[in-house]
Length: 323
Ligand code: PYC
Image 1 (cartoon, rainbow, N blue to C red):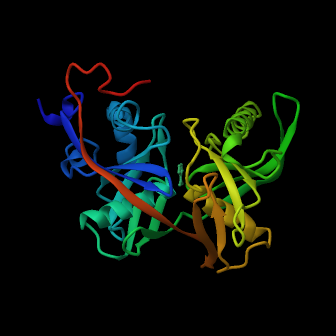
Image 2 (cartoon, protein in one colour):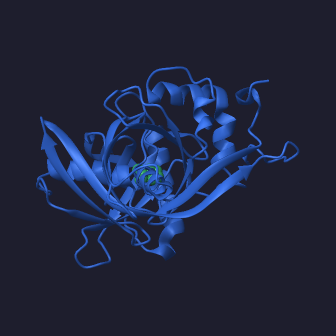
């Protein structure tokens, strides 16, 4: 039987990193994706083929007991766009992400660590579109996400407890509800309450039939508040689709936010927006217009934490993950 038809490889090499706290696991066995019958075409099509035929591999790689909460897995595939240098798709323990900012920063730091890229710029094809990336060497990377877009401004929704929350629905590769109107302190001790409020908002959006403009679930909720550090602009708590909170300030959320701020006249082109995470980690973001299109830029840092081989024994009851 060809290896790709086995339920699982017996071993898989990965490199792990964290982007200011948020974990990424990059598969580095070069034959992994090319050995799977994912067909030809765009990274999005190959990702869809992986989801249709090999979803057990996603869970095996990032779900418990080999993965951790909030971990995003990355698989490299050949790009279809001749202008791109690399292609990658992203997933977590409950599904797939069309784009992921922190994992793109982790990807660059990991490939740099392995000597597979040199400091400089490259173009990455993702399911959301083409993303410009520059690895500065060491821990620092800047990426330009797909253009941010806001489809609802100051939308008020009613929660189950009778309260109302007002915020914006925006995208930059993923879909977000972004609100300052949550009434909670953005502190570590408040995380259970923040998580509960953000889930209530997500449930209310679903109940009200609020989606992205092609019916996408608004599956990330951003609670914004004042920064803790002087010189920073805001702090956030970001709820991810798996119920985990983003330990980083969320790269795609920060890209969507700077788009909204610019449209509101609160962030001129080229001005740096310093976004803190709920842990206090920092992304520095800017926005500019190019040919009528908004281009967000986010700079952050990632550290390699492990280079390892995942093992999947045939008699391991949890070889395809828990859940
Ligand atoms: O950084 O874009 C991001 C992200 C999305 C989900 C977790 N991190």
